[in-house]
Image: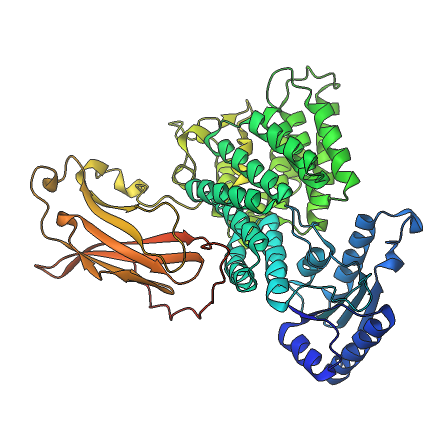
Length: 587
């Protein structure tokens, strides 16, 4: 993204727009800014042969009291109008009158966190050109920060949108670039938000220890810069980590809600209220109906469709799983109410472009409403397709389980056992009709298979007869340009010949698959192999370790590790281009 302040060079702005397909202009009186936007739009449209569409935020009712709309509702109207135009066919879209500050607002956990974030979400899959004009109440002042810092905030907004959609894979590269942009600008607040989103991304991907470490760092950095809303968000994400083990922590979520309220963050308080309600919804006697209704009202006040959608989803799920002692009528009436709530959640997830929520709602709706499922013979394939579109193999595994039913031996299938903790899978239940009662926490993450988890074909070969490679990071927080120690061990099982004999002089070869150095290139596990890993940029780094038998030249095992590197501190960091990645080969 590029921000152009008082610049009147049409050629430069046009080049930026054609390169990035997105331009934000601010720091000028309304008439001058609008004329400049029109001129840029005409030049690009004439050459490309595209139509031009123009929207003003004020026309959607953003002025106080106009058309009876709140600013959030007006912003939603602009995003929806744009979505309907330029997702369908290429064109040039001009959105003017975006309030100063809305363009660079920090995302706060929802796809509706700012007007610009919503526009980016709608624009992501389009071939159109987008020009945004930002107002500035101060005469002659620059409405937007410097290029480096502005790019960093925009990248954070895009990364947050990907996480909200349930596609954390796409967030990683954006966060790495955001960290670099904020470090170049010396923006400690921006760095803190980037570390927080790294932690949130790790939680979504099921990497609990990495998430816990990064979120603790983010919380301390928020405190250091006095960012109270950020501290509340970090506390909330840390509390949600407990749900992965099947034991939620309602007290910690209640504290996060109080922190949001003290910081004046109504949207954050609504999200914390929702997760607190979800954590307690299955407790006997808990007034879940009133709490879900209150949460829905909170989200309506801040015009947060994504939060409303998840509230309806969990409300419907709770209603479908209760025993009828909550005062609702008979089975038919309860099912109709749950269906209505599922349908409302599904519609909002589609409007908010959240395939993760849509897939889970489709699955639970199908399981709880047999009539709905039987109307579509391809129900499982359709839901599996939505999960597959965001790379959520864990979601696909839950669909497989729902379609196959309980296993005769009562053991969870491999694709779930290798991803989720045993404690969470122990909470999996089944109805009398053979439908799974999937743990609520299963939809909070998209965990990848655990390295070294035995596959079904390995059951004939006991795990204790094999040797494994164990990697240990000896330094807690890797940072750029500072060596971090990594220990490599070869650990034989009790049935392996090496368990009773000295370990042979194997060679461990280390390779960096990114812009980092690792020294020495070789180590001997029998002597205690230790490597020094020196990254040259923040972000996720991959390392490959190859264990060989030097006597025969045989590769015994090859493993890869992913290490998250956080920004080193408030000092500037000069980003460098990543080194060429060598071709990867797995043993």
